[in-house]
Length: 503
Figure (tube, rainbow, N blue to C red):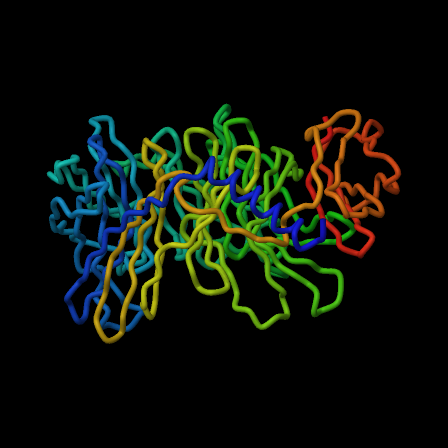
């Protein structure tokens, strides 16, 4: 059997296997045209109602002023069906609203009504909190509009909501290079904790795009990670208890696989706490060794244990750093989502400027990926995403056509519904099992394929095992438990890398 025929047979086998597990395409889009010449509409928050519909918050921003003084004119609440139909809408009067960059927070109160809140700095540079309480029928039940007793708060500030329905907010203290302010308050604006956290290690650190996350639920602790001012590839993470006392500082600089060194580019990244104690991080990783015209960067989902040692990872895209292709980015608002079955959605922008969705199972394997429907927009913004109770993914944002106006959109993507991106270069002319393994790995090659050797590298880049292919088994019984990279080299110089786990 010649190589071309073999490749076609392998492609056919892969296509048949995928057809058994991937359903037909199911993607619903809601689109809203805003006929207003001077108002920019940001679809800044969305949530699922008890009856399965979707409520979106649309921030209406006066775009005629200078960007340093952009302010929110009003807020609309839109109710949309899962089929993409507008059911109802109301206008909310925020008496004191934030700027373009104000975060909107959503949690559920004790009375099971929905809460949308906004933080901003008022004219006196005081932190201001505005919130609207409303039910699933868009009836407003309460509003809050207060200044918080916090001094020295500056923009930018970041916030999350923890499992106790408390809002956690962080900002650097005004005029200080070694002090950050952490605040915990409830949904009614009642301050529970204000901590001015000071440390020499805070010096020259800058808040990343999505720095706050839950580090542990039992006992409760928070993580906040920064970019080192000396370089964006150094992560400095501070771990704090529920009173914002510093428990630990962790620095992540680089790691090695298959003899290559990689660094993290975390200018746009996100961390997600998992119930098993591990932590996921979406980021760009870059090669640092090799010829300039060969170096690559990748979109990568990395799993760390609580000691921030890499225990697993998966890559969904790559490009030559010094090539002519465009850049790709992690979605700056929300990039990682986990469904009730432990599967992961990773959202990023590829080199073509398309918003990509990668579906990764709980074994850290890429199952499928797709791009959202393209428009002829001049600018597109994806603001956030969340998962419905039935594991349907919702992503939303807005876009502008310079000669037409502004549009809001909301996509609903059914799990496992879109076709897999096929990359023939990833098709292996061999199979191997078991994985994880604790003694030997059995490997079998396709006809007319001649293998030369196999090498096994650790996450530290060290070569731990090497053998020529005179056997159909690879011994791993001398390796310690952990993740390794198996490099298979064919006699024609072609190489393949596979992640293996030794237990």
